[in-house]
Length: 287
Length: 170
Image 1 (cartoon, each protein chain N blue to C red):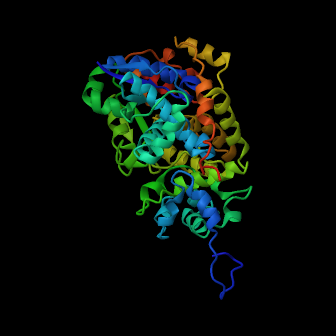
Image 2 (cartoon, rainbow over the protein chains, first blue to last red; image 1 turned 120 degrees about the vertical axis):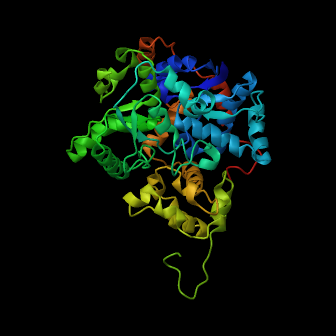
């Protein structure tokens, strides 16, 4: 078993516990052991708190990383925002002057950031440590014929030099993970578009999501395959708002990838929290 | 160029503004911008708003047009934080990071949208961006998950205190 320090962040454990449940079910079946990172805080988020004070943001991120260093483990994340903050913190702290500044702050609480841990998103851990073939072997309920529109979101892939997840212009990881479940991955015309959740104005995200949902609808898929909880909220609650505003029917159920994997591994539909979604993936009930 | 600049007047760069920006992490990167516009084509905020253009924002930074960048209705909040400009920039200016540094300057002046200050407030009081309630813990229990433990805020608060004796917030 390969061990990682698990950094669940805020959004998934607080708003989407079904996603956390699925992750905790799925990983041991794939030979990945996770250890809770006790005493961790918000990563902190790369949109709101970072826009107030980058140095404080970096200091809190370094504290979280130092907790994993104490355990001698790499960090596994399940949220694109946490992955972005922690990966960027590691990148920035390669600078000795900045590292000293941050360690001066950490010194106030008797901690030090050393730079000995790596941060990896759960999707890349499954890709690199488990492999698509072993994911395929863990499936007891192949999702043959299920058409899944892929939405990567922004922060998992970019900036690619820092995130080091996949090629942002032609990523493969989501498609291959979906195909490992027996399903068909579909790249719709606006697959690369941002969900707009981190934009602090009304009109830009509304119009952008409308365009995005229009091409998803045109692709006639069964569900949307999601990897980011923030994007997920845009496609669940947000999709309802777009439907109302534009007076058009948009009703494609978003599904977080690891819930889909858990379902394919045989965990019953009712146990996976799909009923609390605004758009329920009832199409899965045929499997 | 500032609109009121006369043809015969030399352009006056606001270096005080630029020094303040340079104190922020990666705030000085706009100095390397040669205005090629690679950031513009892939910018979703530019596609969906005529008022937002990362190349223009970098130019305003180079001139130090403080009033245009740091007003109460700042265009900076239209940024979607998608990081395409960071990906595309041949000079590694990281326009999105410069924009976030500018937001740090807005914050220092107490100017930010309500949704932003609300989430920051939740983080600064609880250590998370989502306030944990008994309803959340009940939801977690449905999945056999334990209640979320409180964050050691004594430690986090100490980390958030500004440095003393440095030029960080000048």
